[in-house]
Amino acid sequence: MEDCIFCKIIKGEIPSEKVYEDDEILAFKDINPAAPIHILFIPKKHIESLIHMSKKDEALIGKIYSKINEVVEKLEITQNGFRVIVNCGKDAGQEVMHLHFHLLAGAKLGPKLV
Image 1 (spheres, rainbow, N blue to C red):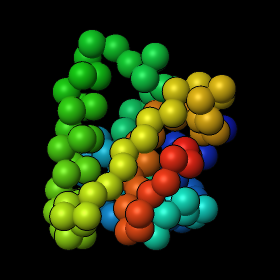
Image 2: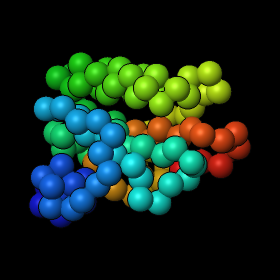
Image 3: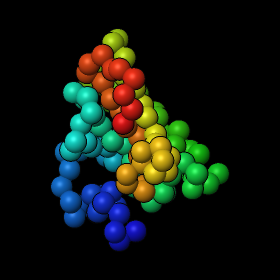
Image 4: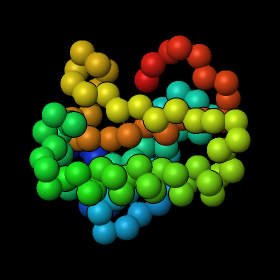
């Protein structure tokens, strides 16, 4: 998608502070953090939202959760906890129409949603 900001980040057209990257996944720090630790995990394949994923994407989504676990271990935030949020659609707060997972941690998180 040419107008997708996350696709532009994946292509390197827009800079990001990368936390993790492989052939299928990119994780980077959110430029507008809602918590002291706010990392976005995105598939490099453009998938608009969870509604738009196919059966073929199941392994990729599982891999994203596995990489989230690796990053929280590396950041040593498993003891105090963290939150993973996936917004699906505009009414749910999805602002970028590219599937992404918010990892929030580093403080006691209240009921406020991303």
